[in-house]
Image (cartoon, rainbow, N blue to C red):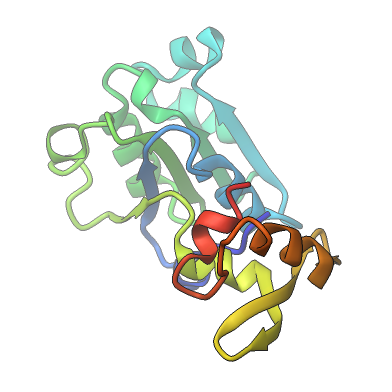
Length: 191
């Protein structure tokens, strides 16, 4: 997984008394990020892609929510935009279950301006997750060889292992008349 720059900011808010809401476009890594943040914690995962979860959370009473949450201290609701009227349910959880940290993910189409702002005013920290940034990408890459501003080799870190792209691989690319430097490295790694 790519380490996301927003991860530590969110971790600092854990157990801060407010819901943590992460929105973003499809496939940017919202679920992966929140699961990584919750790694090692015992948490309840509620997947709103599941029709049973949607039915359960559409308009539950406080007692029904208490039964759903049980003894969990962390609750992760994924794809919250799929649940009609979810904002009031989130408000109840935030207001009535003070020892529970609520984490919510939703797509950019989750209209936070209308759906969540009023019920959760002052009750949430909201973050937008974007696709991998160049900084996040570059943090995975170690530039290991550079000569007069041209990159001649690099190592790619993946799952705590490094894969070296040697000079001969880079040379074959340059043989086609391409010069690899920090300015066009992004295009090179698309190969």
